[in-house]
Image 1 (spheres, rainbow, N blue to C red):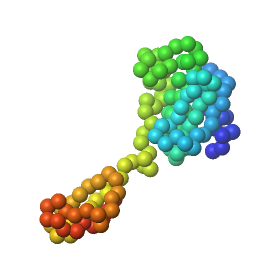
Image 2 (cartoon, rainbow, N blue to C red):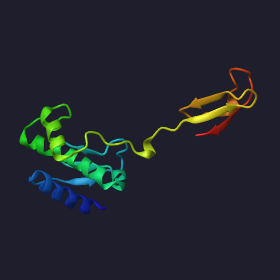
Image 3 (cartoon, helix red, strand yellow):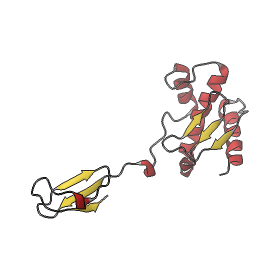
Image 4 (cartoon, one colour):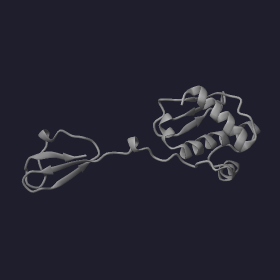
Length: 146
């Protein structure tokens, strides 16, 4: 999907779901990693994460979420996540409250094992096993898997 197609999709979805026009810009932002989309209060444009396009139902929920921010802000109602109006609109129009976690953003655990005693070491960060020894038996440590 290109930015032009996204613009048309957001405009059409706004009319279909909210019966209100979307008159600003909607674009993909390649730098978004952990969020599905963003609404900018200053110039009212929307940014979306292209990675969520793999599931159309989830992407539709994200677009509706951002459109809730957009329309509520322009109507002068509570547009923030904690506001009653926003929560009510999300439920009424079927927007997602949170973006689901992407597989690419899940944290990996690295597994190391001692050659002598078989003690397992789980680490979030990768390390150089040549620089360390086992804390139990002083044996050599090697990388097992991630």
